[in-house]
Amino acid sequence: MAVINTIINRYKEIPGGIIEAYHGIQEEFSFIPEGAILAAAKAFGIPVAEAYGVATFYSYFKIGERGNCVIRLCESSPCHIAGAAEVVAALEKELGIEMGQTTPDGKFTLEFTQCVGQCQATPVITINSQPFADVTAEKIPGILSQYK
Image (cartoon, rainbow, N blue to C red; front, side, top):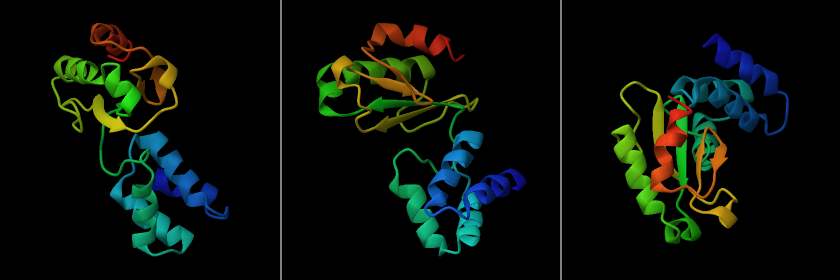
């Protein structure tokens, strides 16, 4: 909890600093622990419901544990039309999990996201915010090998 408080304290005097604090916490843990929401509410002098609302409003934030490598697949229309379903199937097969799940070793989490701004090269996945464009099912093993 000391790490969480240190991160929150960096931003508690900045208007809107809770968002930056959550970014820092998520960067440290790859998710926002429940206790961080309580600590943020106290530090920023806001109700817990409001602190929770900030954490759940932005799709980038994730409350609760997830893997060290968060793989997000764009589910916008351009990616869908370009073959996102095949990429999903390849990711699920390669990792042995379904979208929304985390591998038993805690290494990978699969999530859907909205547009990542790479529509010129669909389908697109991101791994810890690093984009991979023009992804095909055949490319998935090679991409994942960089993170195993």
